[in-house]
Image (cartoon, rainbow, N blue to C red; front, side, top):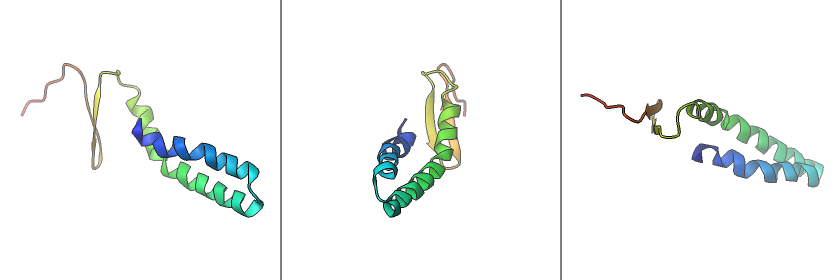
Length: 77
């Protein structure tokens, strides 16, 4: 899922930086990790909810949420 890319890509280097960098930079890496994880909290929740639907479901991102289309569903106007 594209929504989780920043969390997945940034977490390993930041964890490594916390382990090997001097204290000041390790603390900076820790702060960046916390901010990144907290920013991704909504993405994690939405991804968890979307995973409950079948793989054939289509998801459309909207301004205030998502719209999920199931196979065989027909919209009537």
